Image 1 (cartoon, helix red, strand yellow):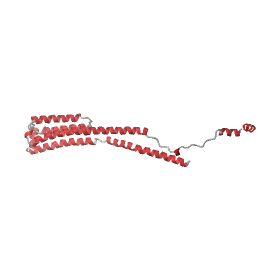
Image 2 (cartoon, rainbow, N blue to C red; image 1 turned 180 degrees about the horizontal axis):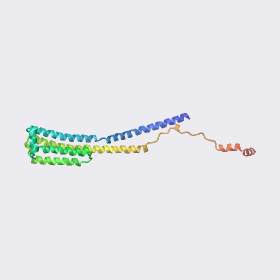
Image 3 (cartoon, rainbow, N blue to C red; image 1 turned 120 degrees about the horizontal axis):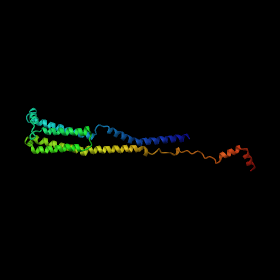
Image 4 (tube, one colour; image 1 turned 30 degrees about the horizontal axis):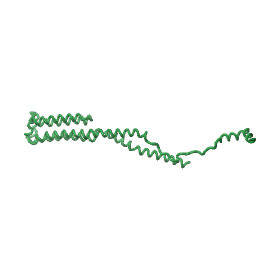
Amino acid sequence: MDSRCSSSADSRLAGRGRGSVNSMPLYARVESCDAGEKKCISDVRRTFCLFVTFDFLFITLLWIIELNVNGGIQKQLDIEVLHYDYRASFFDIFLLAVFRFSSLILCYAVCKLRHWWAIAVTTAVSCAFLIVKVILSKLLSQGAFGYLLPIISFVLAWIETWLLDFKVLPQEAEDENRYQCIADAAERAPLMCPGPLLSDGQFYSPPESVADSDEDLDDKHDPEVGLIQQVM
């Protein structure tokens, strides 16, 4: 009897152990997904914001180099900023980079927007402005920077669009769907988890009782029934 009880207890503990082992990965994944959701910003979105910052800093650096090459920063600032001329100044290309940086960081880093409309607006404005400026201005006659700044600004704007549309938004949607699937599976796991396996030692059947044993005992204690049985 003791060995049967001990074997049944061991089998129950083994069944619970198997259930806990099987259920641990789901809960661990849910906790890891929760930790991922608690991040301020996803990895792909952070990469996109870093590239937007690089766009702004690179255009700024090229503009400063252009100011320094063409006669000094202070003199060129007076010409390009205080006496701004749309046909000859590079200052508006710098302002275009500031516009892209401030708009995209505000929408996708601060507000965490999950739509492409903001990058569509900035790219459309950048492309339209640069195309009109190249056509109407005299930048192409001002040396290498007349080619370099418009082309680099145009290319960086389209790279940002590609990063957001083909990397950031699809990756975040996939991560969200994966997290939802794991959370649903974790909620269904307690209902679908099978119970502990029962071994043969857990079943105990008492010895068979003799039929009508209680009636025979009552007849032995009743004297009248005893006399009748003796006569019979």
